Image 1 (cartoon, protein in one colour):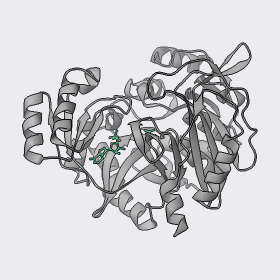
Image 2 (tube, rainbow, N blue to C red; image 1 turned 90 degrees about the vertical axis):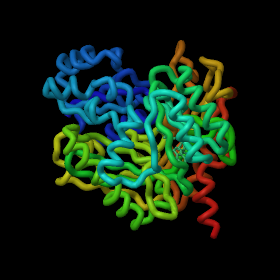
Image 3 (cartoon, protein in one colour; image 1 turned 180 degrees about the horizontal axis):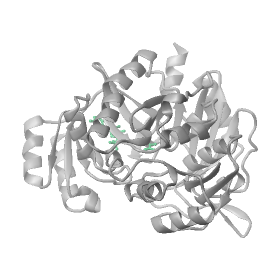
Image 4 (tube, rainbow, N blue to C red; image 1 turned 180 degrees about the vertical axis):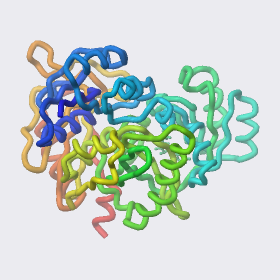
Amino acid sequence: MKVLLIGSGGREHALAWKLRQSPRLTALYAAPGNPGIAEEATLVDIDTADNAAVLDFCRTETIDFVVVGPEAPLVAGLADTLRDAGIAVFGPSAAAAQLEGSKGFTKDICAKYNIPTGAYQRFTSAEPAKAYIREQGAPIVIKADGLAAGKGVTVAMTLDEALDAVDSCFSGAFGAAGAEVVVEAYLDGEEASFFCLCDGKTALALASAQDHKRVGDGDTGPNTGGMGAYSPAPVMTPDMVERTMREIIEPTISGMADSGHPFTGVLFAGLMITAKGPELIEYNVRFGDPECQVLMMRLKSDLLPLLHAAATGTLATVSAEWRDEAALTVVMASKGYPAAYEKNTPIAAIPQADAGTKVFHAGTALKDGQLVATGGRVLNVTAMGGSVSAAKDKAYAALDKVEWDNGFCRRDIGWQAVEREKV
Ligand code: AMP
Ligand code: GLY
């Protein structure tokens, strides 16, 4: 099978690395890719925001299957363009990608199909939103409706913070994404990420992970795209997985099909495990980054037939096997991230992969033969171990061999699981 992978982050490097191991793969292309992905795939210089250009490439190269990594091309209808042209594609239609693209859309699906989530209201102007917030009280959560690169959510512990967040959304802090605001009840519990493949009618549970969104040790400082992750998440016991499938994922899949927008691709449920059980915080319509990196390390099965089955309505015929070990990844970011940071700083050395460790590239580039950091999140140092603690020790041992003066990382990735393992 000739495959084109869309994207350029650590998530896509992990997908490329895993796809490359498939005996069914005959050629792997990636657009735009990065220097890590270039070790696994032929990089193609096409504008991935230009659906027609991607289709044109697929026709010229007789690509059999396209795997879309990030959400932006999905929300922009890349999967529709390709599917309409008869090319198999892993990723939802633009209509189904609203599960990530519009928080209000997802909340309405939850309400209609009785899916557990925080009580909410949608608003298109500030005053009614503020009146509702005053009525509900703090803590309360304010969300820009649209895609805001993870920055559109304010978990307000006080009323003033909540009212300010409403003003900031409606005064354009998140552009068009903030033209509508969702106000939602605060959920108390432990967060977990849960991933399923979907083919429009069937869902296949993959695995769970836990992300570390804050930039600083001890979960302090501003939110980021994710500073590290591990899998599995101990809070996702077999009972919690079964409830999540039955109460959240399956009603979503059947609800989306009923409403004329069957969901295909990977459904990433951000969950809060509350005293009542799993509740939905949000959906994403793609793999998490860096959660994908730990999932790919743990996946024993061939990835290619799984993704292809999701794309072609045949998920009921496949299954996924997982290694029992834990995997953990530490993100190395440019100093200053998630605020401004210096670009093109040299990375002098990256340790070689061995049986249980792998460094995935995110924001890297080659400039005159020198590997440099071009992004905020730059490297994902990933390791497997018999426990999360063991995986953590191995990942940090590898990370300490990275020579990059402008890089930093959190030192406490995995702390929740490590604490649990001590007991
Ligand atoms: P989201 O972009 O919707 O994932 O929200 C970003 C983060 O805000 C989540 O990972 C949670 O930590 C937090 N959050 C979002 N919604 C809620 C909620 N209803 N209750 C508590 N925390 C929330
Ligand atoms: N790591 C969180 C995300 O990919 O949305």
